Image (cartoon, rainbow, N blue to C red; front, side, top):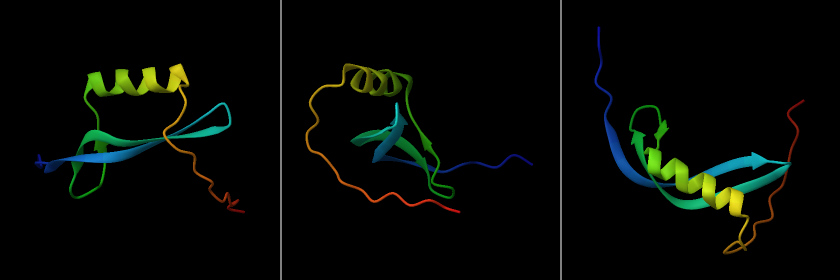
Length: 71
C-alpha cells in the first residue's frame, strides 16, 4: 500500500564532516518529512551547499563542540 508522506518547508542546519573538519551551515531551506524528520533538498540548494563548502570562505562564526567516542 502506498502512503503519502507529509512534508513541511523549514530552514534546517546542515552538517558535514570533510577532511576531518566539521562544517555547519545554518538556515538551509529543506522539505522535512513530519513523521521521520528526513530532510530533502532541492538540486539548486545542494549545488549552493557544495559551493559554500568548496570555497572555504571565512565563516560567520566558529563553534567549539565536544567529541565523544561510542565504545
